Image 1: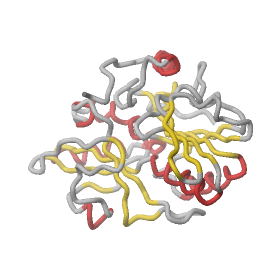
Image 2: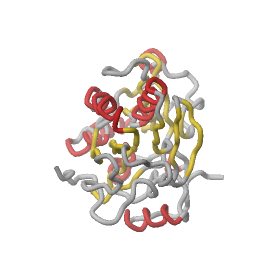
Image 3: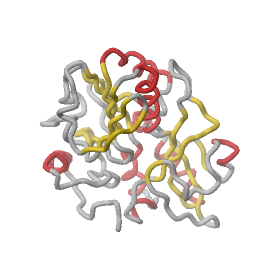
Amino acid sequence: MSSLSYIRYENPIELRQAIRSGQFTSTTSSQCPQYVQANMVILPKTVSDKFLQFCQSNPRACPLLEMLPAGTYQPRKLAKTDADIRTDVPKYRVYQNGELVEEVADVKELCKEEMVTFLLGCSFSFEHALQSNGIRIKNVDENKNVAMYKCSKIQCPGPLDNVTLVVSMRPIRNDQVELAKEITGAPHFQKTHGAPLYCGYNYVEELGINEDLNQVDFGESVTINQQTETPCFWYCGVTGIMAAIEISKTDKVTCITHSPGYMFVSDIREDEDIPQ
């Protein structure tokens, strides 16, 4: 069965309400076209500076959209209306000492007063722009989550050791690759990863991804026609989850993240500046 809901929401407020009530539990790919979606990390204030430094060292993978003060769970920049970061993501992951301990639909009981929230740009935000220009999004067509991979050859710079870059992959028709680069490379999409890191079939050598693209690390694999399509790899905010796991492991703390593909959907349109 498809992992994507057949219900398509156009309004972020309605989607967040459906998530909060438990009516919507699927990945948010293709939901609320034209609105910015965000990866999410919640961790103790004692380690928040370390995570912030990581984001600042990796702006393409972890573009920081908003940082909420400790104990605050209502986004001020990304939500113009009622929103609660503890209930408005379809699925959360909880890590303790670097280990995944549970996936839940609500983290109100886990969010303590000293915890800080980070919201990072997500490539789901530019899917509608690609589609509007005639580029098909394979995971949307196949009702799946996007395919995501760890890049064993790319270690992220900054204050943390052993954090591997994660990328998302979308097969793009050969004659549309340059168009996809141009669209996602637009200035207003820099906050959601920008143009692809790499397009082509030499991804094993260039990125350190398994040769078999069906072997995803996160999300779901999609079909790809090697004669007519080229795999394009974008920086992915799940890199932030990898950083949170490393912090949870080394600092012996509990960290909460979104589950890959299950994002926070904002009230900010894709071409709109985020309030400062």
